[in-house]
Amino acid sequence: MTAAVSAARRRQVIDALRRGAVPETGLDLLAVGLDRFTGSVEEDLEAVAAGGSVFKAVRGEYGAGKTFFTRWLADRARKANLATAEVQISETETPLHKLETVYRRLTERLTTSAFPPSALRPVVDSWFYALEEDALAAGTSADDSAALEAAVADLLRQRLAAVGRTAPTFAAALGAYRASTLDGDATTAAAILAWLGGQPNVAAAARRIAGVRGDLDHFGALGFLQGLLTVLRDSGHPGLLLVLDEVETLQRVRSDARDKALNALRQLIDEVYSGRFPGLYLVITGTPPFFDGQQGAQRLAPLAQRLATDFPADPRWDNPRAVQIRLPGFTIDALVDLGGKVRDLFAAGTTDPARIVGVVDERYLRELAEAVAGRLGGKVGIAPRLFLKKLVAGVLDLVELHPEFDPRQHYALTVTDTELSDVERNAANADDIDLEVP
Image (cartoon, rainbow, N blue to C red; front, side):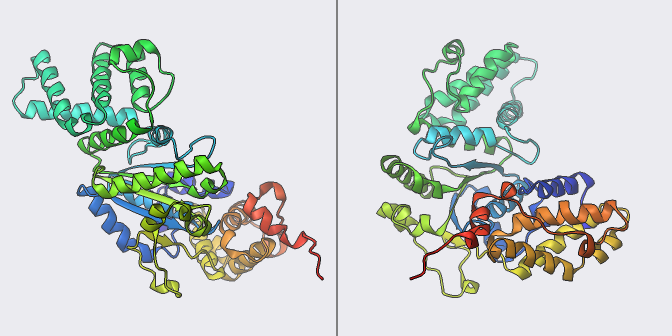
């Protein structure tokens, strides 16, 4: 498997792990324990590509692999030619109760198999190219530019007719973007595209040319999302995977903002189920306290009802088709398995892969996994990030660079507070807290 991986892809994955980050792509190379979800994920992607819509809630403790799972899912979505966007929910940067901000982040993070973020402009340009091709196929002469533009404008109105009932400015702005592009006015075209992407403070002159006023608001954002899905579909992307990550942060905001955010989430879920967003695969991630606690989803009864899922006592019998799925987190065995995948991927890019595999064998991987987990208070579930960082930067790099290096003799695991996340730091320092025992 690793032998078929390109050098660029291998380097991208290994470099991310060396930094202690989750790779943006290539998660299929590292997937451990996700087989249980593969079938249902493929069913969901097929449904979305056929014009359906899907909502899924991913539940897991900190460190259980929610970000890994959603990026693995995004990898599969892009392979199915869907567009993807990952939006981090936060009180200051992306408050969930302001859907116009969520939409803006979506367009900033919009990604396709061919274009990195932001892919909004190439998607829109591809859409107009598709409209041109459809107009020509219908008999419009390529030599008659005026007739061609009239045909394209007519197709634009037809394709966005449903969107126009709730967000008429979306079609108007697209038409103005097209006109500015054809006129060679790159500055105005870029400004109009920024407005279409939900950016605030767009120049008034550009908005006048587009025939629009003000900035996008909460309710307009839903119409713009509907329009974006139409543009994506006609430009060759049958759907969009939208991940709203870390919704548990809602528990830490003011009660009034929290209530608005929970209601906005309930509204989004209802709109997905109503069929308003054909081609949308909406995924949220959160910790168990968000789904079960009184400061989270349980605070709004209608939302709690929509997320309600019965989990069996034995995770082996979990239903991956349920609205809410849970990630069980890592065990030592799973860490060793993951370490083996990373080691093999790393070794495939070296001049002596047999030496890498021989020195960093399964026994050593287990020793390192247990040592890292031990530094984190025995909490194996939050160990993967740090384990992989130490494995790549502290062990594999040195084994490759120095022929005499033996990690059992020459590597001593060190963990400093500065390299830990808040969750990892709390686990590592738990034993340092003095407790009064009566």
